[in-house]
Structures are given as C-alpha cells and as structure tokens.
Length: 238
Image (cartoon, rainbow, N blue to C red; front, side, top):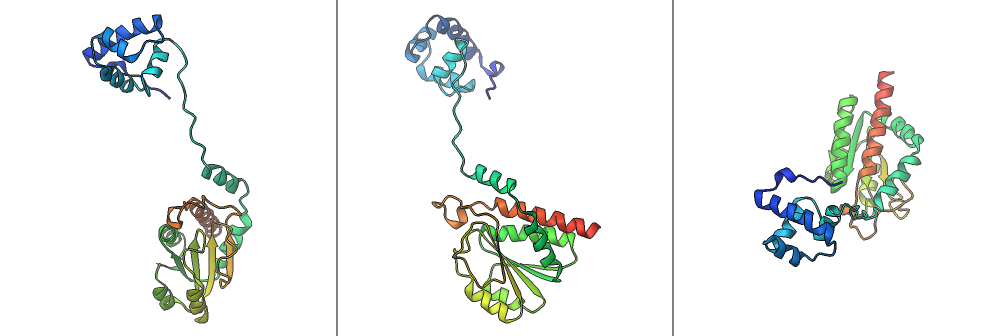
C-alpha cells in the first residue's frame, strides 16, 4: 500500500518533484547524483523527498515517475500464523466440553501460571468472576498454592511447555491436601509432569525452539479461554 501526499511537500520539494517528473521519464537510468545536479539540490534532498512521498528509495521513486509498477516487498514468512490457522481448523470442542464439565464440579478454582502465563490466568479469572459465582483465585507462588489447596479445590496450571520449571513437587503437595490438578499445555511436551490428574495438550505442534519460554506466544491459551467462557455462558443461560 502506498499513500503519496504531494500536498505535504514544501515549495522547494514541489519544484524538485516537478523537475524530476519531467527528467526521469526521458532518462529512467538517471543517477541520484545527476538528478540532484539537474535540480540544483543535494543528493540527500532527493533521497529525503523520495522517502517523504512514501518510497523506499530513489529507484522506486523513479519507477513511479516512469509510470511503472512499484517493487513490492514480499513479507517475511511467519511460522506462527500457519500454526494458529491449523489450531483453529482442527479445534476439538470436546476438550472445551470436558473442561467445562470439570470446572462445574468445583466451587473453588485456583489458576496458576508463571510469567506471561500468569497474565493469561488473570484474564481467565476476570472472565470467570463475571460469568460464574465460583470462588476464583490466581497465584504464581508454590507456597501460596499450598495454602489454598483443599479437597474442594480445582487447580488449573497454564504452561506453554511445562518444562520451564518442574511442577512435580507442588503437584504432589497440593494433591496430598485433596485438591485436583488440571494441567493445560500448549505444546505437545510429553516429558512434562505426569503428576497432574488431567493434562490437556492444545496442539501437537511446537513454537520456534529458539525462543525462550517467556518469549513464546500465549495466543492459543486466549482462544481456548474464550471458547470455555462461551460454553460456560451458554450453560448458565440455558
């Protein structure tokens, strides 16, 4: 997309543009230094004029003046967008149904996450408080989690990989107090904790392995959360 605003040019720039509009079509190979000499301005002025008009450089500006199609940069390929598309196209609504059924069994729910995953938990908690009358807590401290655990509590852990830290110890301690543990992983990390009562893998794919856990996206969590909330609202309203 290109938005050329000649109206924003000052008087010198307008004169320069008009001179180039006459020169360039007759000499498409005109060099910027020669163009500057012909217009009685510096080469940097020509370059700035081209960019002010929205062109990447003088070469692209010349194409416009010659009435030729501009050079369009091909956008860098994204590995994440195809992954998100595949997730949406293969979304398994039974995961949402089963998860909502589990949530409905508990009046007290604790959402646990670290780093960006904690932010997802806060958002989920906000939605749950609006849509349900359940006691909702959010935490990111293992000691705090243990204080909240009892036989009436469902713990929901959000983690992209489940491998940033080991959840084994905290899972064992809160389960010993009678709480149930639901682990939600984005990536298909089968090496993640086996101590959870239930594990949901949102995908069988992986994000860029060069990214650190806190650098990875949480987009799939938010999509899943919205579907869960929609299902809960439907059941509450029915």
